[in-house]
Amino acid sequence: MKFRLTTGFKKYFANTTWVVAERVISMGVALVVSVALARYLGPADFGTLNYVASFVALFTAFSMLGLETIVVRELIYAPLNRYEVLGTAFVMKLIGGTIAIVLIYVISRLTADDPDQTLMLLIVSAGFLMQATSVIEFHFQAEVTSKYTAYARLSQTVISAAAKLLGMVFGAEVLYFVFMLLLDATILAIGLLIFYAKQNAKAFPWKFQRSLAVSMLSASWPLFLSSILVSTYMRIDQVMIKEMLGVAEVGLYSAAVKISEAWYFIPLAISASLFPAIMQAKIQDAHLYYRRLQKFYWLLTWLALGIATPFALAAKPIVTLIFGLEFVESGTVLSIHIWSSIFVFWSLGSGKWLAAEQLHKFALYRAAMGVTINVVLNFVLIPGLGIQGAAVATLISLLCSAYLVDLATKKTRIAFYMKTRSIYSSNLPAQFSTPEN
Image (tube, rainbow, N blue to C red; front, side, top):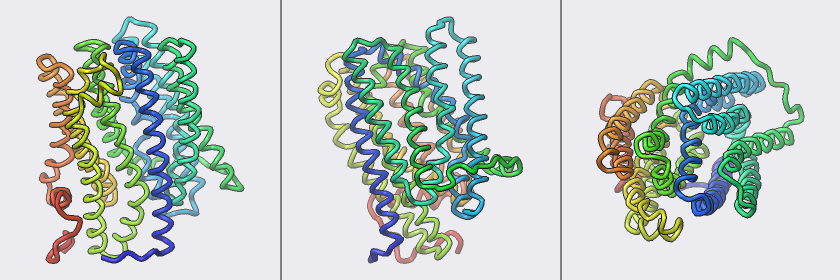
């Protein structure tokens, strides 16, 4: 298959380059800072910091409301209504973020007697109000100008890293670094607002439209519920480890997960940048659409395998070198958890496909399956295997929810076929027949 360097291709390629470059730089800086923090705080305080972040992350869906795909789609298909779309989504996200903060406060007061923990949770959760500005990211995605989001995120990365390093130099306690999590959200919000204002002469004639809010919520509720499940999926293990084993074990587990999850930006960046082109192909020609999908899965598969293999083989030396001997137990966790990357890449990539096919309910079902399996396996495996059991639970639950579940319905079996084929080929067979046929 020959690719021509058309104007459209160059635009998508440039957009992808900016997004990937920003994420690579941010990943590298974040990993360095996390390593320094882990060494500075030690397993117990590092575990406390990650427990607070993980607990708040369980409520992220309330600040997002499953709106990303819906808003981007609206901005692409109805650009003349962009101010109403952005304004409505902004207000909805503010309301959702406020609800999340209230829930975190109530649950914390009901389940914990530690006022310091409640304070930390409220500080971090205040960032949900700042995340309402992420509608600007949706705007940049629709316009294929994600470089402005990259500028804002790079600014956040540099300022946040400098502030955290200064805290370590001057002997700051863990509460200072909790405030830094709020600072991250604040800096990003300011950056997005600045770059959006520079690119739009009439920067904020945003309008809230009640009927549009109802319409977007009716379309996004399966994605919202799915996001709740995914947020639970990604962070419940650290919350359960804290309750069952203690904060020091959370610190050890988090060290491994930091390395493993550092690569999850790749499918997000590739999907955000390339999927508009795949959706355009769906409109033009079904065969082109599925050919591009197969290449998309092949790219995700081999990027994941290229990352997972060396880290699995040298997990303990890598963890010991990076975090120090205090975290040597994290090596076993990493050697297991890193293989989850394959299924995470598939899940994040196929999430866009499910949205394009309007299979939102299936996304909800697979997320529910993943959470259920993960929580049950955590209860079974953590008492006997410790933090390694949590890693095994994550791997098995992702295998089921990101891959095997595709066999459940006729409409999604094509995804199972493509994911399997992507292990050994980037092309569809000549006799391939589209599901529509």
